[in-house]
Image: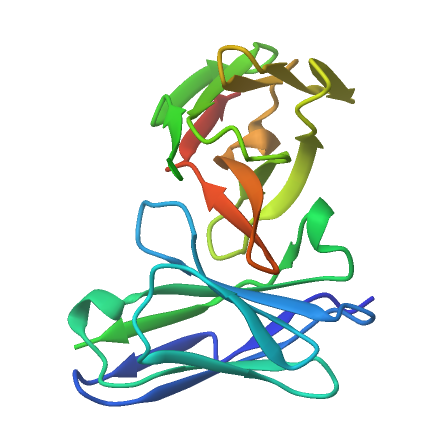
Length: 112
Length: 114
């Protein structure tokens, strides 16, 4: 098992720009979730993808969007970046969503 | 309704001591309660988890105690070691629409002194 890998590890963007973060899920995992972790806080659920369809979303605006590909890898896209979007973005995958997820190490996004 | 409250925010324990972290929730629809351990620069890693029909679960030095009527649960780390120094998050899981959603507490930074 290779685990969940995310890229890039760090990213600096300017307010108003757009960003794409990538995630390769663990082998055999067909469900991917994305979480935002602000400094000193617990992760917050953004959305979940199952079989290439978004099947759940947290309290995040539409400028946060995503994709899941046939190989179950995933992207998180954020448009019109705001300073408050600065956070660690975590991707998590599972093959049985009831029992929990394997998290990647995250992408640290800084918006200046 | 979706909040999970965690305490303390930070905890310092001597090597060999017991670390105790507490969490409380409001939404009785939560049906699975995992604990995650996070080291700096890493994502959270599942440590141990419990279902609400069980009052206690033990795995090695880690024990979850669950009080369904009080809507509280806690993590006990026995014989705490310096390698246990990390941030610990309690979480509660719920099905929202077709998705499983984790709601995390705010975290406890544990330091185990040698």
